[in-house]
Image (cartoon, rainbow, N blue to C red; front, side):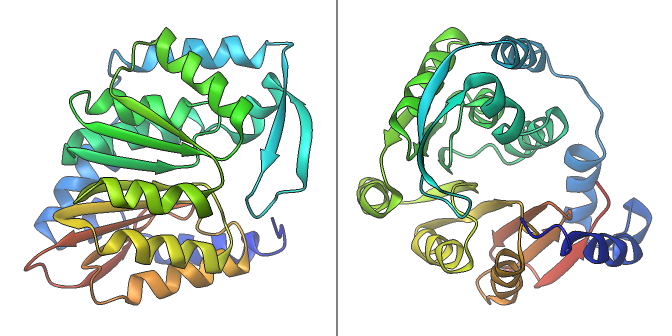
Length: 259
């Protein structure tokens, strides 16, 4: 990550970001109240956070294959270091839970499972949905599957391997998709490729969520192209997270909101 890239962007974000009082869209106001501003603690949160604590104290090691923007090939890493560095924070995980709970998608895809904390937050919010999660590293994927079994997330299907190989197969197997969480490769070209691959399958009320939209200059450039896309109607910038709605008949608007 380019650490010099973020401070100036954060200051600019704070100048632009609005709270509930600056929202003039009924849909976005409801979304802000129920998803972004809500502090409600769902009972599903505690088991996921307990699992996180177990991993943060684990002395186990696995071999990690990293295909993403920060990838440096194969290396052995401790579970606790992966959990600390790569798992979504409780705040972001709970945002994802509330978002999925709000839209109630039926077909969901996640690109980038890691140890499965983000997967669990999203899968538990819509337990009747088909949830396909994609992870490039085999041993990381295997550990995530164990976590899904521990928390009885029976609606999750793991797809393991390089996205270049597995993504075409996933797309072939689904006719439409309601929800996609992009967190597997933070390069500009890859992000735009994934967006365009899924956008042809998105349902009428579908939503895409992009993690780390300011991870780098290239990632932010990809986000700026995505929010200009005419197929994206309502787009929301939460600084680290970008949300894209494809609501038919909705006036195209972009919002920068405080989170």
